[in-house]
Length: 109
View (cartoon, one colour):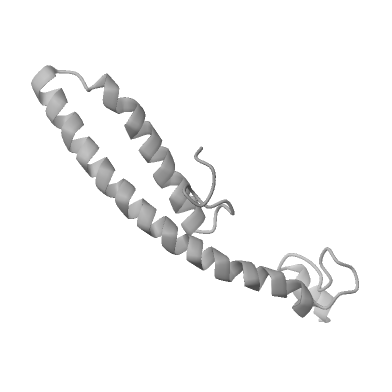
């Protein structure tokens, strides 16, 4: 088995998008981006931890409101939706499923 056959199962040839460039040269920018991503991941973990704390408080308040009034608080539904969306975005970034970091490292979605 030659080297092009060995790499074909792993997603392509040695040259990739830049024809004629060795694989090591193509990896250098990605490795440099990884260092920045690690910093963004640390920030994302801190943001996630704060969001998780807020969600737990929100869940407790919504539960108490539901117990005493029979219905969830309409005013707390939107913040709950936004926090859950933020947590989902943070986890996708932390698990390398997305390349865009969550807020505050990028625009709030």
